[in-house]
Image (cartoon, rainbow, N blue to C red; front, side, top):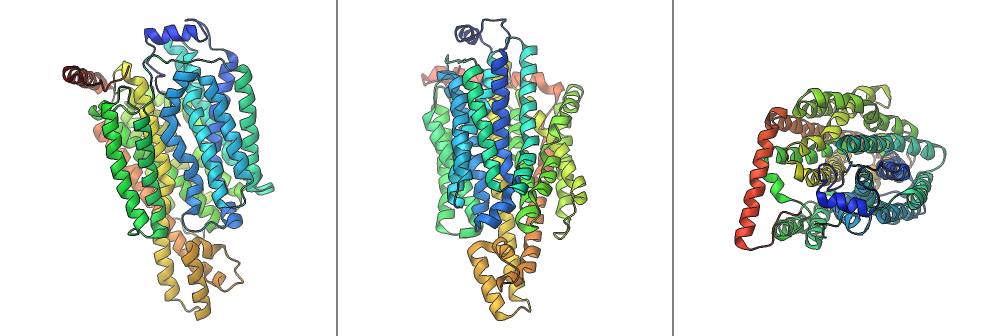
Amino acid sequence: MSEASGVPGQRTESSRTNSAATGGAPGARLAVGTLIAGCLAVCLAQIGIAIPATLNGLFQSDLHPIGSQLTWISDAFLLPVSVLELTFGVLGDLFGRKRLLVGGALLMVAGEVVAAAAPGVHVLWVGQALAGLGAAALFPTSLAMLAAGTHTHAARARVIALWAALLSTGGFLAPLLGGITGNYGSWRWSFIVVAIIAALSTVVSALLARDSRAPQGRSLDPAGQVTIGLSLFALLFAVIQGPTDGWGSGPVVIGFVLFAVFMALFVLAELRARNPLLRLDLFRNRAFATASVVAVVGMFAFLGTAYDTSIRMGPIQHQSTLRTAVAFLLLNGLTIFLTPLTSQLMARLAPRWVLGLGFALMAAGDFIAAGMPVGDRTLTSLILPLGLVGVGFSFAVSSITATAVNTVPVPLAGMASATTSLLRDFGFTLGPAVVGAIALSNAASRFGHALGGSALPAQVKAAAGQVAAEGGPLAVNSVPPNTPPGQAAPLAVDALGHGYALGYVVCGCAALLSCLLTVAALRGHAGQETAEEEAEEAVEAAEASTGASGAAPTLGA
């Protein structure tokens, strides 16, 4: 999910000196306690991200969210992760990673407890946001702490592979935990279980983890952090609220305008920052720029597919959380088993072919899923489309960062990894927002036309129309069938089926676009040296430019 800044490929002399001063002389082996703490932390963070997806049906039936409120449950967690990861990476380097590991787990405890006790959807958002803040600290800090305890490329590669395996384990465990607790208890028990795991992670990190830091050349970029945070929040607000408030409504239009304004301010801030949050000069490298676009678009396709599936099986079809968990095991659970195969493919093939294959499989799975009738509730019908998406995602997510990092010079590998993580996680955040907006807009329009042209009694039409005006077709589908608005539920199901089928089509198109971009624009191993030379020339040109003008350098240490 996320890599920390300054981890692979950035072991400078100053960082070696610092690691000796903060625990562990060169050549020392990674402490077992630190290894356990870091792996448990990343597994916890990934469980926290993935577990709500199996519970959307229970949220709908218990809390009765209206309009876009269901989408915000997922994005309230994802937004802090995508916006604050890089900042937490810098904070760990400056003030010590053990503090952030403990603090992040404590925030997740607090957030999950608030979510479990939520009397309504708004408090659930608060709990999700708190937990997401904790996860934003855990993802980069856990990897940086593990990498800081290694001092050879081989050892660091093994540790990163183990970290990635525990991240995949979290993705595998989350649907199981959500399915079992949701089916035999309630959705609140799912958050309680995550809170217990977070409490365990807090204790393990406090007692066993060895602190480390790397403050040389690191500093906060408050202007960059504030502007990128406000920009991404404004964009998500506009996209998510568009179907509910209307795309031409004042708040939605203002949201898009603020996104553009704050994004422009972010670019200006990063061009002037001594140690920027995001290294804009990296994008002068065509291969890296392509990999970055693919990270956003491709991961949008995956999490959009996952969100689409959770709404289809939960609020639309009213299937149990255990059955929804099976679908998510196909989407999330295959990565841990396919990692060895992905590694072999990456070693034998140019990266663009592995990425291209992954996105092609995702596109095929999405297009097949789009053709599934909304009345088909069998699990066997999901095996082929979701299995293809799951296998494709395994190939893609395991190789995106490696592809991006291998297109830049070694001294920039850490920042390239961190930048790719930010963009990838932003793609994850966009998935539920965009798919929810497209599907709900289409379903609302289709339901309105179908209701008006139906042979239902006038009082049924009026009652169903009122419910739809408040909460959309999802709300109509959730009322008891023996009530007047409940008689219009078949029309709502049909409209929702078409709306979320369109969501699969959008995700398939995004995956196909990522496939074409990858194959056409990435040059593979044969062009790696050329790409590195281009990037090094861009770095030298930028340094010469800033040195000549006397301005603060835009390239950090």
